[in-house]
Image (cartoon, rainbow, N blue to C red):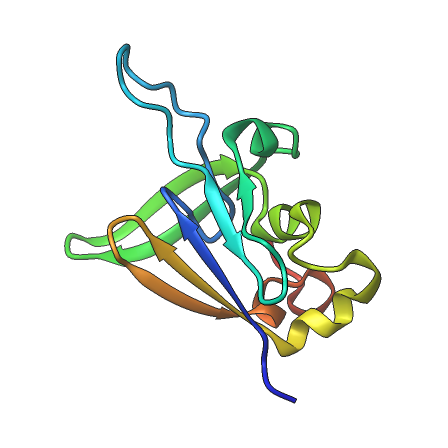
Length: 127
């Protein structure tokens, strides 16, 4: 079986979730919606209001940068919650998602590929 790809085009997306909650300066345009492109479905737009309805989960993580190890704290809905709430992952057939891949493309052109099993709560066991 071929892995079904879900392409996510986003203004800002962190592995732990998406945060659009930062306040915009006056006169600034609103953040672009998250667009989920799922084969066989029309593109799904996820707005900041949609994300605000999901539980915000705080996550602190360490990562390497050009200045050494850095620690960052992020808060927002978990990526898995965004995918299931939007219908990109079928809640009734959530086990099928582990055979899929998630392609994340930011507005800046940065691309990341994740196996859905890496973010599926019952398989990886992490946020």
